[in-house]
Amino acid sequence: MEKLSRNSRVVAITKLLMENPNKIIGLNNFSDLLNAAKSTVSEDIVIVREVLEKLGMGRVETISGAAGGIKFINGISDESREQFGERLCELLKEPSRIVPGNFIYMTDLMYNPQIISKAGVILAKALGNQKADYVVTVETKGIPLAYEVAKNLGTELVIARRDNNKVTEGPTVTINYVSGSSGKIQQMSLSKKSLKTGSRCIFIDDFLKGGGTAKGIQDLLNEFDSELVGIGVLVDHIGAEKKLIDDYVSIIELKNVDKNGVVDLKPSKLLI
Amino acid sequence: MEKLSRNSRVVAITKLLMENPNKIIGLNNFSDLLNAAKSTVSEDIVIVREVLEKLGMGRVETISGAAGGIKFINGISDESREQFGERLCELLKEPSRIVPGNFIYMTDLMYNPQIISKAGVILAKALGNQKADYVVTVETKGIPLAYEVAKNLGTELVIARRDNNKVTEGPTVTINYVSGSSGKIQQMSLSKKSLKTGSRCIFIDDFLKGGGTAKGIQDLLNEFDSELVGIGVLVDHIGAEKKLIDDYVSIIELKNVDKNGVVDLKPSKLLI
Image (tube, rainbow over all chains, first blue to last red; front, side, top):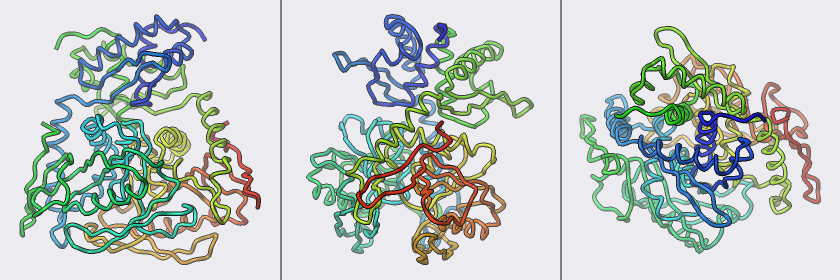
């Protein structure tokens, strides 16, 4: 291939980094693709790193040693993050979202890639220090968000099922747990193949009320000799009386939905 | 903000485009962010467009008119696509994947962001001409793939549920459908709020055998006066006797799993 200009090389490097967040990429991958010397690629990477940091768009870290290279930690600028929080609060306050029982319908938001990709970057940043091996969720509404967090952390995703009779899953482990808010007993299952024992896991969900599901995930992970090292949710119902868990991060703090359907919520400290 | 160099501006433009695939972005968004004249940004975009096309990494289209701007169509190079197909076939042929009943365990692959993000780009490209308003799937295994296709097409995602008793969904529409392979009657539900009537929808799933689920989705969309305009799956079981549908795309074609657990499959024409 003909030689590319520096302008062109930095575009290609940016795209490759963004496609592989939190993965170490050796410099030879770039020099092979771009038909350029490693020293040239190193200078290109300095440019990419500087502008991403300046605009708050992420960090490029250098890992030295034989298995070394660079890795990209995705980011979002302070301004975009604040705008995102305000916009999300506006959306969640729309009166048309209130469904019978005074619940907020938020399924469309949980399945909107433009929203969930930003929320995923924010939660991944908040939980990135936990050095997790897996991101875990339980079907269904939190799956896209958990997927984005896993992608940004460079880990695999694990999804617990509510039923345990899928022929394509092989042997499964099933536990019972008590919903923190309703007190109802529920079940969740995980294929024996889905998780290596001795893993560090982050739990991601759409909504946290009593924390019963998070406790259930903890019990399920124990069956795999694995550990829950972090919890992140889109909406934390801080108005719920008591929580079974205390160590978690959220994007939105919901205080209350009053009897007229007026929603009282605000962005969490992650957004300010 | 101080002025940025061209090298720096093209990095930022690439990142913004990649975060918003198939969305029209006005040039003023870039000139505001980068503190540069529109004419300068236009020249930057030419550079980004040329290198992405040269490396098969995607296209940048110009949309003229008052609501105009540019939009990014994500792509994957021929070489990466072929490597991806070979690697995926190797993974699916691993003997340890065979679970009782001669099914292939592929949950870990469906939840692996490195695999699913590439598969999503490939299916989005194959189905991009359908001008879909939504990408639809039914829980659970196809959700990450459907999410990636929706993200790449710039649409929202809709997920049909297998149960219909979620209090947070509001009124739902439920249909019965017959599984094409087992003949078993199953149910799926969709919240009335999840889909605008008169929409064009693409159905994405992990595995296509008889096509009963796709027919079910078609029936469910009919209840919303909406249309199924495309179907994409990761694995097409071409060895299945008869299909209820004929117009679809796949990434892998599975012919057979023999009684010794030997898997016969190959990449589809999308990967060659």
